[in-house]
Image 1 (tube, rainbow, N blue to C red):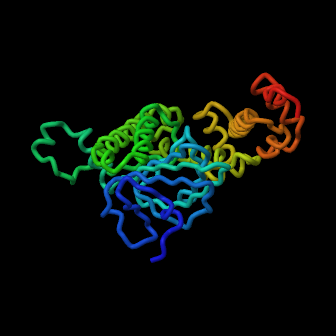
Image 2: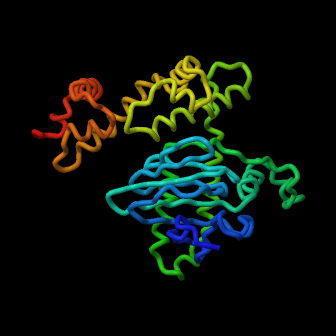
Image 3: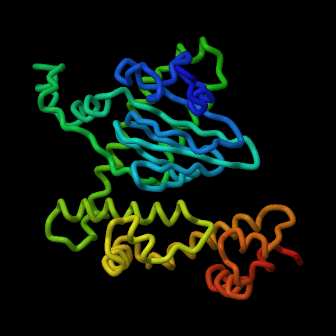
Length: 313
């Protein structure tokens, strides 16, 4: 079996046991583990099948195609992929980019959830009972990183540079369990957001929430060009009018304004770099009209791009 170029770049906290669905080893034979990739460029990979995993770019931006949906992860946004889901990924950066992910052993999420929701007396009576465990499926979307998730990823990143003796002394299961508990807490905490959608049926609200986040992630993943309402709605499998109305209800802004604001925020960050060229930055973000870009930038940040850059260019 030829080595997978993607997985062949990975370092692991499992003493080299990097799971790759394109090779023969079945996923259920591997424990939960951390994978780390450090490189400037990754051509779009072939199709892979994922374990339940959480993925974060420590610097730079990484693109994912999960099933039929597009996502972008950054140092402030992580992605959850469910077990059995198919994905492709790619990135391109000026400096070496660090990607870190935790892939969970199959059934680990169900085991953790079982211990969280089962009364202690029942756990003592039959600690290994699995028949009543609930299957765990997360929303496959990008999530804003919180301090605990950031801290746990930072601990794992430091361990990758530690010697083997230090790794062996570290309770990795404690880190992995804390990560999964936090994911479960975050998932449970989405209910108030879901309830902002007006459907009477809970199942309809959940499905609408899922589709709206697919649409929002699509806008995030296609930051450097103008994306029309029809295109974003099609990605979310909703009619344009329905998508626009429910997007506004959930996120408090129209899809068009959301996307323009995201592109402007990228431009503002790019203008902090040494010797920025305003016109080039605007063009990279899909703003072909310089005067329109300047007007939108001033409306958003109360100063012109040139004033923000602090010089003439």
